[in-house]
Amino acid sequence: MDNAEILNENWDTLTSFFPEGWTKMGRESGAITRLRDFKSEERLMRTLLIHVANGYSLRESVVVAKAAGIADVSDVALLKRLRSSLPWFEQLCGILLRESQLDLSQPHKGYCMRLVDSTLVKEPGKTGSQWRIHYSIALPSLKCDSFKITATRGKGSAETLKQYSINEGDCILGDRGFSHATGFAHVRNNKGHLIVRVNSGSMLLFTPKAGKSLNLLAKLKRLDCSGRTGEWAVIFKGSDGIAVRGRICGVRKSEQAIALAHKKLQRDAVRKQKTINPQTYEYAKYVIVFTTLPEEKFSTSEILEWYRARWQIELVFKRLKSLAQMGHLPKHDEQASRAWLYGKLFIALIAEKIIRHANDFSPWGYDLEIFKASEQLEGVRFDPSSGDPCSGSSVVA
Image 1: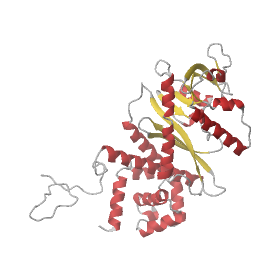
Image 2: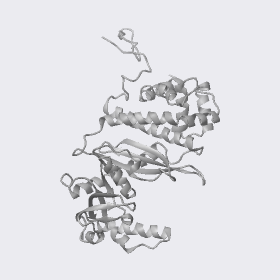
Image 3: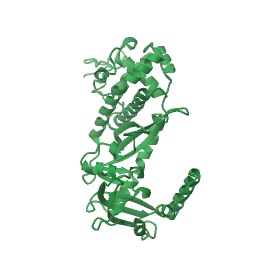
Image 4: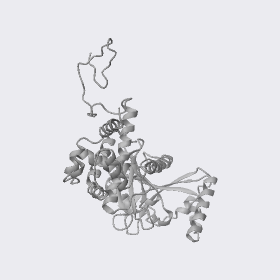
């Protein structure tokens, strides 16, 4: 088998994992109006993935595509196709996300646990702009169930829980960057719950009965040894007056963890040339989370243990940036950059799907029902006397 045949077989195997009707989606999404020199939707997608998946420049990508006999186009033409492919990649990613949710594990105590975070992707160069990817994965499967790409400045770009769609019964786990009353209210209003680490610099806490300001630090100081936990019912208020009822769960860190936290504070203070507030030193001795989960179902220890699982999303981002090479993106324009990012996410979701099939279904790594690259031959038997088995055929006794 020559190189061209191997490449075609690998491509056929890869596309067997694409959503059904993916070529038709290219036209329906408006990404393709005329094919011109690409000859077919498959050739266009192959050329786009040469650029997105391999990290080639536009010029390198068209050279490789021409050498492989896929398409003979200019780098300018490929850039235009990349821009127009944004809705195509968005639609394909959405379908793959829905597919991955079919085999999610059963909810924990009736709640679907989801980890949320965001990461920055920067265009190369001193003037390169930044983009923010808002990402959510489900526990315990660690499969992506939501993502969104925004700019890092301007309306609708903030790191907030409002970036995520919330379903009834969802429980969102987030770091202190999500510690805002407006985001909490978004989750509550959609009948979800949350476990979010509290940002001590933005806390406005009140007692639920008297409505008086809560001196949380005084209560935390009662946790006078490592591993001791505490819980307090509170009303979390934002500067805009939005209020959300819940409870604060806190635990004192080990002495080693406290020393590391203080060292980090000092390092950041030197870098930013700021003075550390004494209260900040005190708060650094504890892990403090706010939750709206019912007390009768989740104890203080359970809440804190669930928050520990949030680290898993950091590992997902590291894997995404390393395997999908999402550490930076080519500098073209907003439309092309978004299309490139969605193309990378499409590749990451396809990789996850391939891994699931390889682990769960068959030793040959793809689903025979959807693999249509080769025709199935029936009624062909192997003749022992000839010593010539029918390679690639389906043998029916």
